Amino acid sequence: MNNILLQGINFDAHSSFQQGPAKAPALIRKAFHSDSGNSYSESLDLIDNTVFHDVGDFDIDAYFDIEFITRDNLKQAEKLLTLGGDHSITYPIMKAYREKYESFDILQIDAHSDLYHDFEGNPYSHACPFARILENKLADRLVQIGVRTLTPHQQEQAEKYDVEVITMQDFDPSNLPKFERPVYLSLDMDGFDPAFAPGVSHHEPGGLSTREVLRIIQSINVPIIGADIVEYNPDRDFQEMTAYLGAKMMKEILAKMI
Ligand code: MN
Ligand code: MN
Image 1 (cartoon, protein in one colour):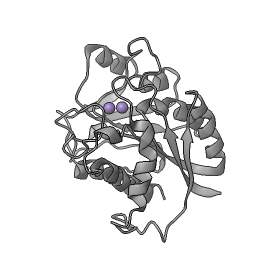
Image 2 (image 1 turned 45 degrees about the vertical axis):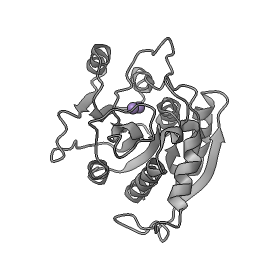
Image 3 (image 1 turned 45 degrees about the horizontal axis):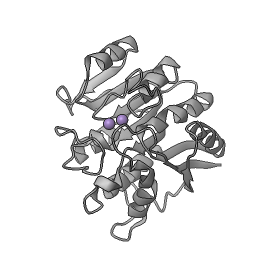
Image 4 (image 1 turned 60 degrees about the vertical axis):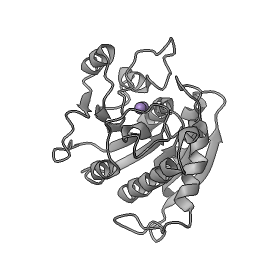
């Protein structure tokens, strides 16, 4: 059994504003394998430590196919790294994860809390996955970092589901959350400041720097059982800089997962 499996989910049908993230997995992967860099993360050589098996990208016709694909892939590996896709993919991924892992927390890095009960009538919008995850008790704890768009409704939802929201305004890099259960990491590329990640559908200035996100990831004090990198929108990118940022995140997340 391979320890880590890489899957791409080409899906952006639940984006509320712009399509584009369905094209992201292939471009992040291409940046990851580009000869412009070497195979070293900041802590180890990913080629010498290659334990991830790439099963490629899946075109999605029906939303819950994401759950079935993820479930199948979780039979072949302990852990998955998923390239999205819009953020709606995290809900069906967590449905499959919960069957395999009884106890885990989610760390979400995002400009948005994605806690809407529904968004413009769609309960599966990319603005809603964490409401679905929590109402179905698919994780034991949700910690969000980088949020800077909290509405009164989402504030209410956060209180209802005991979400620990670390807003950008309150973010203190010297006081990062500690975990007691394994963690699933969900990285929405719009958690970064758009100066670092212009290739996202929703620009929200005042976000995290690359180094701050790396510090958050590298300081996770428990095993990472899986991760997704979502919301990269190539149509909005500039000189592929967000694809390369996604690839850098892939490297550092893999280094922590191995
Ligand atoms: Mn999101
Ligand atoms: Mn977001």
